Length: 389
Ligand code: SF4
Image (cartoon, rainbow, N blue to C red; front, side, top):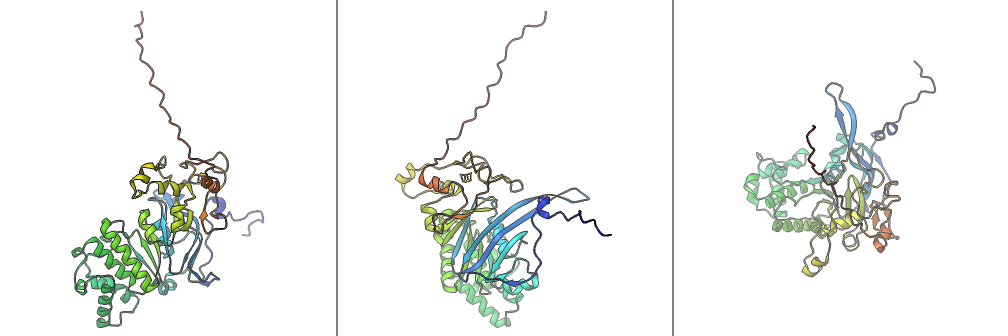
């Protein structure tokens, strides 16, 4: 039956849902040759379902909500933010381990946002991941030789038993493990050694891009430095590009060329590592850095940590306008609660920030507020009521 002309399809945006994805066509797109990855308006939403029989869609967890950034060839982009802000989801979406809800991911000039598994396969050789937990990410029943050689077998690049064994020995040597490690099992190694095995596995296919998802968070401090130094050496030797996800700001500064700060599914600031630490512009970054200890007792005593009130709001129901306004110590009566702040360049530099008042905060014209102390009303006094006569 032909629908009357007045009836039209209700668009997903009008139902409060993300826009429908474009068709799954592999396209080559014009891109800046310096960028290995270009991410535009990326959204990764996870549906919330309710009901036993109908499984109704009642909302979405907006883990990543409209982020745009680039990763340059050969650089390390640090991605920081508190737990639950969406940084790991970004990393996995870039590798297409999570399906993007909207937006575009361009890898080396090719739009990979909607590529099917078969089309992604040759690209997977060029994109690898190192996981956070070196204990859970290695199969305890497989020998190290099998773990490290598996990517080569899966992609049909093993070249036979002897070449594969030689390549595994070579990879183990590259990451600083003895050749006899190949015949041993993950439980025989320490956390740092296991992370080296994870790195060897990631390097097996000669990737261009590696997502390091909190690769040192589960390790002792002394071992962390070894792994970070190893990652830097590997980067120089093999021309790798890293997305380094972490919440330890000192380590991120050490390894990163540029740093992006995430808050509740948004990127709120991006700049070179030194500039971000020397001149943070977004109130969230300012508060994060105020909590990093400085190894100088005199400076440390004079500093005041900015404590953010409350918890991270739910990504299923984020605050309107500026998402940080419910916790921001610099929140203003205008704009903050009414308009979404764009991620914009400050004063012609490459420093990007998503705050309406960044320049005034930097100039010291806006100071952090003293938070009001809300006193509980005193309990009513108990009075003796005479018994009824
Ligand atoms: Fe804080 Fe307002 Fe800036 Fe948001 S826009 S970070 S609430 S000052």
